[in-house]
Amino acid sequence: MANNSWGAIIKKVMPAVVTIVISKNLEEIEKEVPPELWSFLPHDENNKLKIPDEAVDSRGMVKIGSGSGFIVDQSGIVITNKHVVADPKAEYVCLGNDGKKHKIEILARDPVDDVAIFRINPPPAKLVTIKLGDSNKLELGEPVLTIGNALGLFKNTVSSGIVSGLSRSIAAAPDPKSPVQEMRGLIQTDAAVNPGNSGGPLLNLRGEVVGINTAIVFGAQNLSFAIPINAAKRDLADLKNEGRITRPLLGLRYINIDSDMKEKMKLPVDYGALVMGHPPLSPGVIPNSPAERAGLQTKDIILECDGAKLTTEKTLQDILEEKDVGDILALKVLRGRKEIVAKVMLVERK
Image (tube, rainbow, N blue to C red; front, top):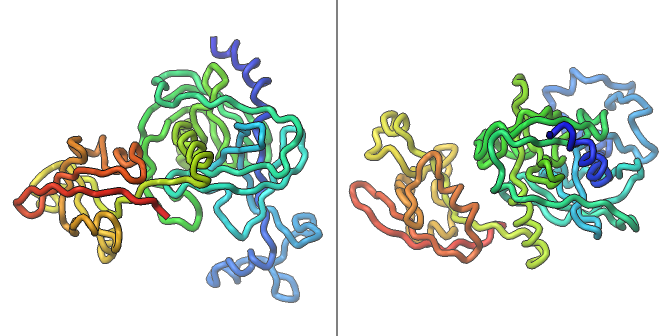
């Protein structure tokens, strides 16, 4: 059934998938080369990086990467990954399905999830858009399809597969300049995804976007991950209502406790969130944060949030994903041998 349906869906949605070309000034690229690598790179007689002439345009700009995105509104609104458009010193150009180049205006980057929103500026007169689905309704084994700019070389590459897993967690850096962090709640699929596909749509059999392709595991086969589209729908609503993406801040660094962590660290419980810095010398409670104002301390163990027991399957981060700025959390905290309840009002993450 899926194979018979994909052809019509591809024809319908392909014009809404765009390629994002990332370019940077040659002088900026030279500044960013680590000193220890400089001697291994080719140079000209003036000790400048030697790059083929055809790779540098008349303005001295060099293409350094690419990604994918998809149009969701007639006004030219496009969703992609944050890591695709993360560099403020880079120049981004959007290539439509017809190959035409368009300037873009970045409207928002999600401070937590790997999602960014930009506008084609000015938008063409007629745009094809993709309908956004409901990622909460995805089921294991459900057929899915991806479209993107594979390897930055093969535009409109299509691959299909199934939903292999839900609510997956991986450790990854959302962009090259960010530290590695845990990405949770991801959709796992066996559809082939390659560098350059980042930001492209993951589609269901109705031709609706259910995810944003975001990460692959190098060295593995048929192991790809996408951000649930409901995260981007929330961001779009924030942008429309507030003019920016608003995400709540608690102000804690912590480690999720399991039975192994309990034994290793001689803890009194095998669940919850142990407040401590990462790395250990950094503060577990962020100064001037809601957590500090509520009196939370390093080495506290948060057992519950709003009555929900914190486990490795239901973490504090998972709960925060469902909260808004201004919400008040009731945290059951174990401090030494004493249990206390802390009330925390979430503020906007800057």
